[in-house]
Image (cartoon, rainbow, N blue to C red; front, side):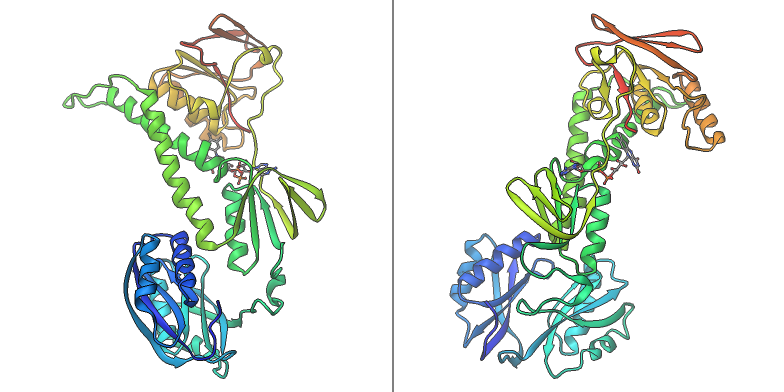
Length: 441
Ligand SMILES: Cc1cc2nc3c(=O)[nH]c(=O)nc-3n(C[C@H](O)[C@H](O)[C@H](O)COP(=O)(O)OP(=O)(O)OC[C@H]3O[C@@H](n4cnc5c(N)ncnc54)[C@H](O)[C@@H]3O)c2cc1C
């Protein structure tokens, strides 16, 4: 509900809110209890609301309590009595805010200068507020002059009834400024930048939010690499005065620990940002209907622009016989629960190297097989040579300049036959797990 004639603005302290979805619950409860123009803020632990006449504190407190949060005192925000149409909403770009404390400093400075309902957001680099229609909004730029923050020019925010003027904003309805397919690092960077510029954004994901890096790429591989490094150092350290022993690797527990880390980082670095920036997230597989519309399940979505941030999949090389051999990809390798006795890694880019190295550190025999004459083709030769000699000194087998002749499997042994130099590398593994890793890309 919008504020109306004769409404008075109040601030209610609310304990227990931890995220934008808590704000949403509190706002809904207070609105249902009769408050108007409710704006909850979990960082400040408060909700601003308008009521006509004295507030019914018991009803409002019960409403908040009923949603599981703790109601506090209700106090008038200021003595301004609003009249219909008197307040104008503004957006002020503010550079230099880096945290919730910065948001508080900016809000306080604007509020002290007469701004109403101030909500600063460091991620968006902006402060939104209202001011009486007769007030020149440029004064709020001056309000931040003595702070470390750098305000831009205030822009009037279009109301629901007005078509938006700024940056081609799509306005209401089901049309978006930008629809992004995918939810990995690339998609998030684009969604953040577009939202900061005021665009109406939708993100579509058919799998797990966060895409490759956090779920099956950088994060899980680096944590396992660190575990392998610690295990190797425990068994191979140069000081006679230190007695340390590497006993065994419990891959099941390591995979569980890795999964916990992934879940935490996915929540903190991805899930929470969707609510904080406020773009819409839709689950499902996106397909183009035509060059202006996408379909997700039964929903047809129109947008001014589309961004395909759909990432990549592991590529399976065309090696004769490979289709009849069980092989691993980077994703399945990082979820192995038992250690392969011998792992053959096809391809020696950075992903192949790190996955090979971590299993070598855990105790598997590892052979890296590469078509080119050197590892890390896209890196400087000096770097590649130095990494190659480190890995060989640690005991990894490296075969370069290989031509893949065929792959075959008998029983639990998978065999990769390569030529030039003529060599046969046999991989024997424990259990039913497949044996071959083709690193992504
Ligand atoms: C083992 C491993 C380790 C790595 N380590 C590093 C590292 O240390 N440093 C580094 O910089 N990079 C690393 N990378 C690479 C990095 O993870 C990727 O480059 C990066 O995650 C790609 O991000 P993206 O946003 O382009 O795509 P992705 O993160 O792959 O996201 C694409 C998303 O699009 C979704 N999608 C696809 N099609 C559709 C559709 N039709 N509808 C809806 N959704 C769809 C997919 O489900 C997916 O979630 C690593 C990769 C791997 C595999």
